[in-house]
Amino acid sequence: MQNLFMSVFMGSHSGGAKFTCDALFSAFWVSRGALTIGENRIRRGEGALLRKGEAGVFSQPHGAQWVRFDLTEGEAPADALLSAPVSLPAQPENAACLLRLDQVRFPPGAQAYRHVHPGDGIRFLVQGELRVIADMHEQRATPGHAWFEAANSPVRAEASAAETQTSFVRFMVLPSAYVGKPSIRILDAHEAQLPRKQVTHRFFDELAYLSPG
Image (tube, rainbow, N blue to C red; front, side, top):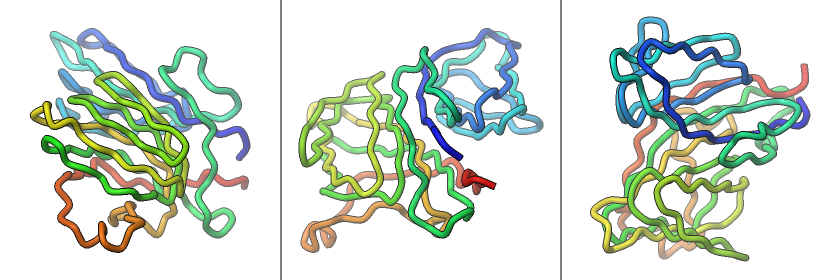
């Protein structure tokens, strides 16, 4: 598969509105209301994955607000908040990839020490303020801000001490060996021994075949 893009969107739907997945995959995180997919009701603060052609219905009577991550082939969507080309993780050719949606919450002043992940992904800040420090640049994220992190690219994240909680949702394409396992690898041996204050909640791990053939 060539020209694979990951994109993030933020929006809302009125109650009873139907969404049909036109992308290869769409990962939803619901910030208000609910989304029903088959017999599963995805409530506020929860996430779920739709495959191409699958559909969901937004809750009555007030609808829903959401963050959505798409994987598409061909061209990046023009209306996305952020799009980036995605490289498949390093693993045997034609192996399944792992699609993961999770949420990371930081207490005031907490840090994710300098680390890497083994797959590409987009993060979207939903609460608080986060300083994201890469080797060649840094940025300050506030609610509604999205950023891309490439596989094995070192980064440190520092939550604001002035916020009661800082949190982002994250969609990643990982090697299949990480099913059910943390993907973070702290680079400094000393920092790897320090207490981890941030908490990660995983919404789903789904295997998908994204390689040619």
